Length: 164
View 1 (cartoon, one colour):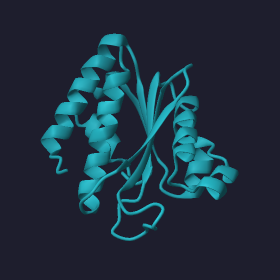
View 2: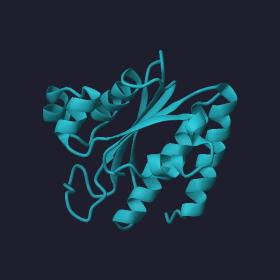
View 3: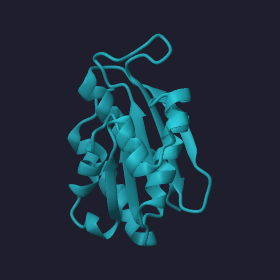
View 4: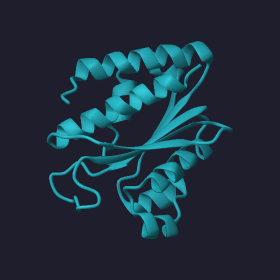
């Protein structure tokens, strides 16, 4: 799946309008996308009215220090797991003023994959403050850039679905 920057910006613009109309703030917790989601949403004029902050937690230490992901979770489930993504989104909500947050952690390649978690495996979690989180594992194909772009697009679509 090839996703263009224009498509990402259109998704972010739609999300921003929905968040703005409800007075909600967004926080992001990113690993494999390295802040790309935060970059896309902040490319939208007026995003300061609905984007609170982004956490780029590429290393396990950053996930623990900035978001409170437990060492036990990382050891048991790995950095690329739904449980880690859930703890990332919980940490993003706890360490921000956001009403809505999303976490992305995955294997964008070209290396790093295993038979259990091949390149293109990306785990997401999202949630609204005060509610339980949801999570999903997606398997994207393509090169590193395509996997990361598909991850950002998936995240934006999941966020849109959460805004009432």
